[in-house]
Amino acid sequence: MLPAFPFIPRFPTHAGPHQADENRGDRIASDTLTPNETGKRLRPMATSETIPSPETTDQAFSRQYSTFDVAGFHFGIDVLQVQEVLRRQEMTPAPLAPAVIEGLINLRGQIVTAIDMRRRLGLPPRAGGQTSMNVVVRTEDGAVSLLVDEIGDVVEADSGSFERPPENLDPAISNLVRGIHKLKDKLLLVLDTGQTLDLSGGRGQPAR
Image (cartoon, rainbow, N blue to C red; front, top):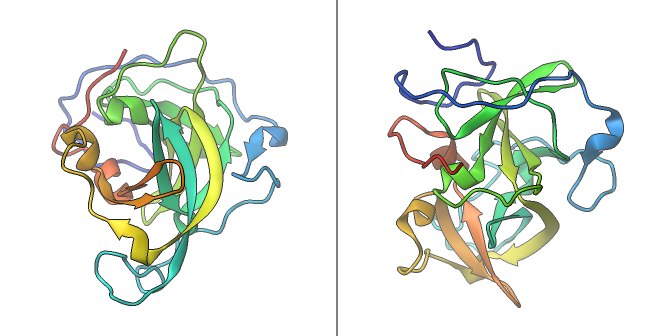
């Protein structure tokens, strides 16, 4: 029987166990950051009617992305989908969850599921001593945290620069990416949060 997650990504019930840190309760307010370190929360996720999709509209518009890095890859999520970003949080294990789920965090009394993005993308584990950070995204089912390596800036990209993922991109990554924007010095991979949170197909490799 699965634990009573406040947010439950879709995943099979036969997934193996995974260990995580002991929970030590709420963290102090100073643990909360925004991508530009102003201390303010980002706006909650808007509806699909207020967030046009670059791949489904010909209308030119710009969009702001909250960015983060995972194993050298630079990802972005629409800022309207990001609730906040956090430093490393203590976790409670979720022993019956898939290996991609690191555990549960207590976010000011709200229990939030944390997904390790390295495992979700099938990437190698973090080096010893390297801690993760949390990108907390808002979904229709509640908040969920994506564990990433580094938090970047909020960047603005024009819809005209949006392209499909390159063919040479690892399928484990491209399957979770809606497209890319070519920035001045790097590629911005636009994360598909819906695909990322859908674990029903057993995608993602445990990177231990």
